[in-house]
Image (cartoon, rainbow, N blue to C red; front, side, top):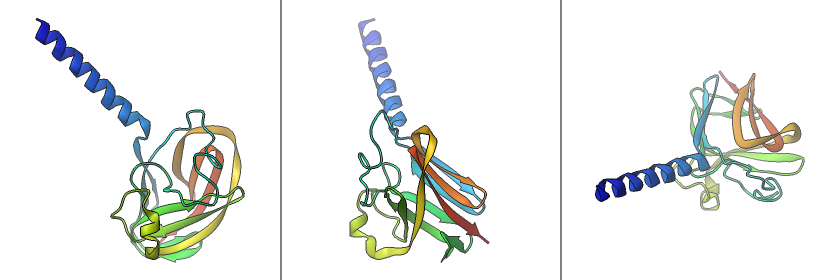
Length: 164
């Protein structure tokens, strides 16, 4: 009987630990017309995000865990610049009023190793950032009309995306 109780306790702890791990920065995806983004969703958890956890003027992996990936099913444009069909990693350099958004052709590396792969950048666009009315707890990417929208804390950035 003691062995059964011990096994049950171990199973409960393992289940609880794996549930907590999944909740930290769960994987998610966003779909637009002929474009898909796969990323992890970190939480604010009361922290200062932009200008704090995510410093201004430094490359950010645009989410958590693995590098965020964006796949274009067809040729199109990203931030007004042409982009070929394919899969890219998505990077950002947040600023107080403007962000740089970068597509990189190397998709085979961990999310914090950008500097080793920046020679594979395909394009870089500048887009304005704006304050949101409400606080967004989890980093979110979504598509609305012809824009890919990134939101977290009280910041929103929209990148025009058109795929033919």
